[in-house]
Image 1 (cartoon, rainbow, N blue to C red):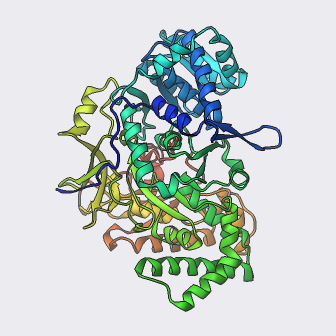
Image 2 (image 1 turned 90 degrees about the vertical axis):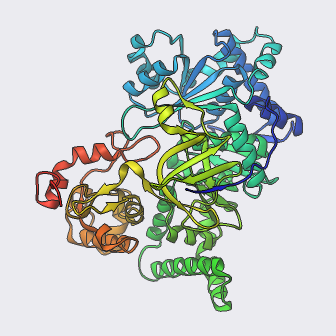
Image 3 (image 1 turned 180 degrees about the vertical axis):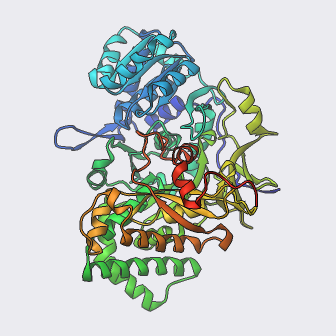
Amino acid sequence: MLEFSSPSLIDVDQSTSIPGMLAQRVARAPEGTLVERKSSLGGKWTPVTARAFAAEVASVAKGLVALGVAPGARVALMSHTRYEWTLLDFAIWAAGAVGVPVYETSSAEQVQWILADADVRVIVVETPAHAALVESVRADLPGLVSVLVIDAGAVSALVAGGAGVADAEIERRSSMAGMDDLATIIYTSGTTGRPKGVELTHGNFVSLTCNGVAGLGDVCAQPHSRTLLFMPLAHVFARFIEVLCIPSGAVLGHTPDTKNLLPDLQSFRPTFLLAVPRVFEKVYNSAEQKAGTGAKLRLFRWAAKVSITYSRATQAGGASPALRAQHAVADRLVYSKLRTTLGGRTEFAVSGGAPLGERLGHFYRGIGLNILEGYGLTETTSATAVNRPGATRIGTVGPPFPGASLRIAEDGEIWAAGAHVSPRYHNNPEATAEAHVDGWFRTGDLGALDDDGYLTITGRKKEIIVTAGGKNVAPAVLEDRLRGHPLVSQVVVVGDQRPFIAALVTLDAEMLPGWLGSHGLPPMDVAAAATHPAVLAALDRASERANKAVSRAESIRKLSVLTLDFTEANGYLTPSLKVKRAAVIRDFAAQVDAIYGTAGPAAGS
């Protein structure tokens, strides 16, 4: 087994906890800005000092105590990403309780399962509609005592209700937790089966965030560091960044609606971001679309090519004088405008959840935005590998995170170890025993480590396709490359026990009008575009480009374009935007059969 480790860069006292890190931040710089809140009137960002935030956290925590929340009790949060989420999250910890995040898009059945499995006593939801959803399953939740609604004044009500609780009680509870104590139970979004509750301790967060500050200080711990969260805080990735901002000294902002993302980026002006690759694909495709046609489109494509060439040359040792001159011209004409779109100060972005792709990685680095691809899971409290500033290898997810170890098992599965790894699944000893082996966590992902310990993800162990000819195919590389085309929203590669590889493709309804216009085609809806010869020809060309990454036996031979997209609402995407492959293949079996001209998988080669 090939194995690499990155040494821990910190020595943390075992009594340290998340509330302890907040207290340290207040002690270091009480009047320094910790959060900026966007006002509902005028959209101005208002600073909140560390001292003021900690005081508000304590006041809300008193309200939870007054409600009867005991140390170790479970309190759930169900909301979009907003200031109140972070406030309540830290108040739950200050009260000695355990936070249980719930996606705001969860169904009644999912809410019931999570609240029952975690034995939640109190849930704070965002809207009356969320409260009604909880009430619809409350008969099956005998342990649930209170449902509070943020938009109906939950925070103010908690502050008022806790006015009689002594400061000393919150101080006592805040100091109770140590590194081994439970901080949260995060339920995996579940592409198959019921979500599993991942128990994460205070030590998991403390270890990962403090190592993050020590190892990625250039990204998150500069005097000017600031980030705008727009990913769901129910997801471990955003939750990690929320906590990371406490020891790093960075300023945190929130935006709940991605429809306002670009204006919010331009007004907040973050220096680092976290996002999934789909966000970077959308920004690139939108910029190309806005270039229109003719000379402006040719200019954008030339600049994009220069950016990619420049980045590759830089990685290989240095750009030529001629290439540097071209890059300077492209920067004035194109790149500076793209950087302004992202706020004008963004230097770094951390990308995870799926491979970004070499082309986009080089493009963004060439325009001055260093995207640090990383890899992690809920069970590893987010990152367990990440590229470093100045030591990035595009196409990989970097070496082990400081304090982490990675191993490639004989079957290619990635195993992880370190103080950031979850100790167990909640109420699920069988799953815990299956995933944890001799101090290592079996991730279920497939990958490879190079001679310097940089990790490349090759797919999911459970998603390997075996064709009728016996060829093992990891679909991720094909799906990720094909999804980079502006027309494409989602891709599911198929071919298990079939004679060749094919793919189901959905179209991006937002990008379609601009693409049609730039190609001299009349307006049409997704259903019409799905059968239009020019659209099909463009998708065929895109699949041919994607096929260059794999062997002939692994390449996509046919596409089937669907007339709907995969969304959370129709049950084909998880809240973390992963495709529920089994559900897609089940419900679109007729389309898959039509590709092969059969009524089911081949019996054999």
